[in-house]
Image 1 (cartoon, rainbow, N blue to C red):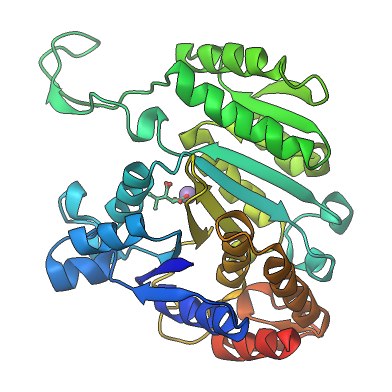
Image 2 (tube, rainbow, N blue to C red):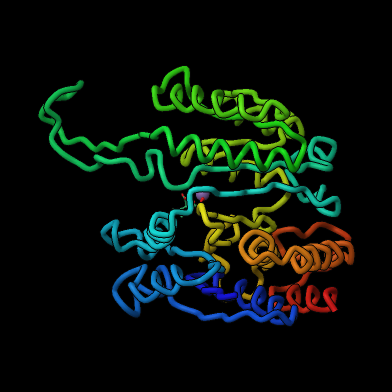
Length: 356
Ligand code: IPM
Ligand code: MN
């Protein structure tokens, strides 16, 4: 089992270090190799996704990824910015299916900004299409407008587009996932305005006919954003495009108390995957030893489950994390009165102890 380890920037190195300790403790035959990515790779090699890093990722069964980005790179040309590393990995590895679970651990109901009764027991799964939509659609760029409201003025444009196979395959992923859960899929679109998403809705409906045992409904993205804070437990699986999924998954993350708790998996057709916390590189707290490593540790569990076929080991990690939460240990992002504040390494120590 070959794992490419890409810690990246900011808190990335700190949280990935804790996940590695957990993986080591499992005593499984992993081959792990680490490489630079993001701003760290730009500093060392002049590019956020060096060829050697991409090659390592491609040859691995799974990639364990930390986070990339720092404000200091905001002025670089777009192709050199740290974010291009994660976009490049998604595209080059064909990681079209992004799983972002939002689970509210009962010990953390008070860490959410929502009323406890709204979120207690919450368990939803956002499935975000990850290699299409306006993120990758061509053409894009800047030019002088030849038409529109201001001919002759500077303008910028991006292209929202989806092809039939792209929508079909992500729809299948969602229906299959729902079959293993509460058998409900909500497809989120903006079909009332955008042709791309009327097309999306039509195709998801067609594919849904192959899954009569799964209940399908459709929701406009603005309404979905509202329903997520009004009655989040009504959702089971949400399937949506790249950009809506980006936005809704951050919103869903906060329902659970902290984005510091949420893992994610990005898979291609052969179940090769990239696993990363749903949060970013948090440069404001980098190097302070306070970042929550649990999202990364839980991402490692997803990696064991989806790409490495080690369900038992995945469950062992998840059980250990719940145990640590039950003990009342909290990094600052999930701290509330009456619990014990710990740092990144102490949280890693506690998970290791709970595993043993
Ligand atoms: C995410 C991030 C990325 C995205 C950025 C860093 C490119 O926000 O994984 O959600 O927009 O997809
Ligand atoms: Mn995002």
